[in-house]
Length: 573
Image (cartoon, rainbow, N blue to C red; front, side, top):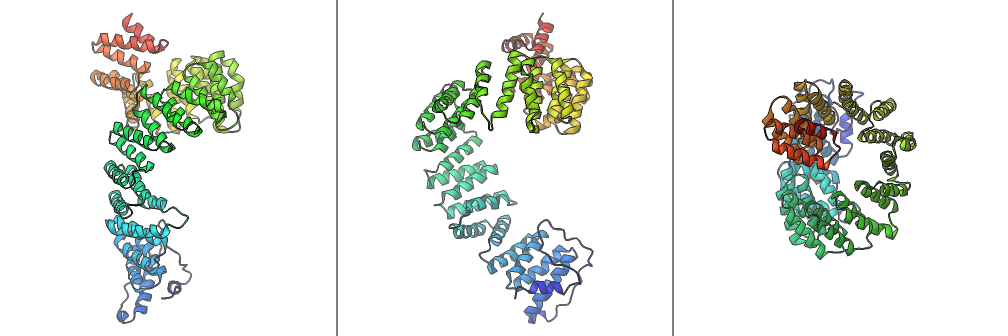
C-alpha cells in the first residue's frame, strides 16, 4: 500500500479535521461522536478495502477519544498493510491506549517492514522486556548493537538508556544477562549489566555479573571497580579493599585502579595504613598531577592531614594546579586552626573557580583573628557582588561567624540588614533565629523559624529548630513533638534531629525512651549539646556517675561550650 493511504483516509473524514501523529503525552479527548460499528461484509474478499476501512475506523476512533477501539482497528490495519507508516501509527496508538500486547504486535510488524529503523527496534525490544520475553529481547538488541558497531554513536550508552525505561527491572536484568552471554567477548556489555544491577539495587545480580565478566575479561579495571562496589553493598568491604589492592598490583599504570583503591582505603583503612598506602599510590605515578590531587583530597576528607599536606606540597613544588593547591592548603591549615598559614594560602588563590570561596574564608578568618571591624570591608565587597549567589553567601558567612564568635548583637544587626537585601534567604532567617534564641528572645526565634516553614514547608532543619526551641524554651511539648517527629521522618539518622527527639521525650516525661534516643544521638555525633542533654536524662535516671563522666569528657573536648558549662554547674556544683 502506498504511503499516501493514511493521508487519503484522513481526507475522507469530516471537513477541517487535521491529521496529526499520536505522541505519548498527547491528549485524545475530543467532542466527536462515538464510533459506530460498520458492517464489514465482503471486506475479506478485498484486502485493500479492508485496509481502508480499518484505517478510517481507527481515525474516527482517535478523534472520538476511544483509544482502545483505535488500537484495535489500527492493529488490524497494520497486519494488512505493507506500509511501515501505518504500523508505526498503530504502535503509537496502542502504546497510548496502554494496550501493550497489541502494541507489541504492531511494533513487530513495523520492524518487519522497516528493519533498520532504530526506534522500531528499541520499542520492540522494550515491549518484549516488559512482556517477559527476555531471550527474544536480548537477541534483537544483540543484532541491533552489531549493526551499530561501526557507527559513531556508542550503542552501550543507548543500551543503558533503553533498559532504564523498562517497567520490570528484574526482566531488564534478565535480558542483560542473556545479552552478556551472547556477547561474552564484549567487556562493555558486562560492564553495563553490572552497572545497571547496582543502579537497580540488585546486589546479587551485580556480584554475579562482575564475577562472570571478570572470568571473561580479567584485565577489565571497570569490572574490578564495579565488583568492589557490589562487595561494599554486600557489606564485604575487606574483600573490596583486597580486590582493588590486587588490581593496583596488576595494573599500576591504571589511574582508575589507583583512585578506586584510594576510595576504598578511606572507608576501610586505619589511620596508619591509609596514609602509608596513599603515599605508595602517589609514588606509582609521580607525574600524574590529577591523581595526586585526588589522593590529597581523599586524605583531607579522611582526616589524614599529614598525607594530604605531603601530596599538596609535592604539587606546590612542581608548580602545577596552583590555585587549587593554594585553596586546599588553606583549607587544611584552617582545619588545623593555623589561621596565619590558612590566610596566607587563601590570599594566593587567583581568579577562577576557587577565588570566591577563598575570599569568603579569608574574610571569616580575619573576623575571628582581628575582629569584625577588620573584616568589614572584605565582607562588604563580597556582599556587593553582582553575582547574587556570592552576595547571599557572604551575608550568611558573616552572620554565622559572628554568631560562632558570640558577637550576638552584632550578628543580629547584620542578619537583619542582610534580610533587608534578601528577605527570603532562609539561611539568614535560620541564623537569626538561633541568635534570637541565644539572646533569650524566644518569641522572635520562633517567628523566624516559622517564617522559614512558610517559605519551605518541608524544611526538616526549620522543623527541628522550631520543635527543639519549643521543647527547650516553652511548655508547648505536644506541638514540639509533632514538628520533631516530622523532621525525624525525613532525617532518621541526623544526630541533631535525634537529639531533639530525645529531648522532647524527656520533656514529656518518657525518660527511658529519651535516654535511648539521646544515647543514639551521641553515638552518631559526639557534640556538646547532645552530651548536655544526655547527662541531664542520665542524672534523672539515677545514673549519676555516668552523667558526671560524660560531662567531664565533653568539657575536655569543648571547654567553652556554654550549655555544657551550665549543665555541669547545675548538676555537680
